[in-house]
Every structure is written in C-alpha cells, then in structure tokens.
Image (cartoon, rainbow, N blue to C red; front, side, top):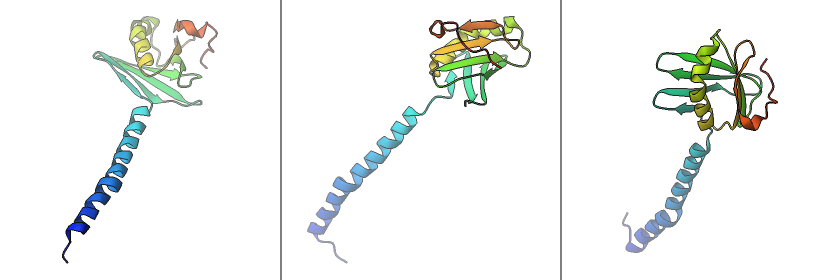
Length: 138
C-alpha cells in the first residue's frame, strides 16, 4: 500500500487538529482533578498532621513528630471547622506542647476554625472565629 503525499498530509492534519487537542484536554482535566483534591496530609520539617478519616459520623486526625504520635477524635466537622478530642489518655502538658504545630497543620489542611479538647473535655485551644460557642466533643 502506497501512501500519497496528500494522504500523508491529511493524516498529519488529523493528528494535529483532533488527537493532540484531545490529549491536551484529558491531561488538563487530570491535573485539575489532582490539584483540586482535598489534602489529607500536612507535612512540615519536624511534624505532620494527617486526616485518617473525615466524615460526619466518624472522624480521626493524627499528629506525628519525631518521637510521638497523638491521635484525636474529630467531633462535628466539615472542611472548614473541626473539633478535636485527644484520645489514649494523654496529659494536658503533652497536648499543650503540640497545639501550635497542630494548629499550623490544621490551617494547611484547610480548616479555618477549630476547637481542641483533652480526653476529659477540658478546652486546650480554640479559634477566635469560633466565638467560643463550639460544641464539645462526645
């Protein structure tokens, strides 16, 4: 089968004006989907904050640094507000020492408002935008 110059030109035109734009469109779509996906990990040089699970019924967030891991049950939350309750019997001093880093991690994950409680319900920190009327975790 011999391809004439006119047929070759037509094939190049189809590739250039049909296939290439479709590939570009698919690639751009994938990049947008990846870029817009919500973050689940906020990594810093000395610590990280990870959303293990985030839903209205059962939510869980963990904080890790070089030597420790603190886990928090997340009470009523959505993508802008989170209410954390420390678990595993951590003392107030242990929780208080990680609060500044935890707040930075929550901000990087997109939470604008927060409340952080100890296991027995004592408030450790809360955002000013919250106005102090946050629900206590169950």
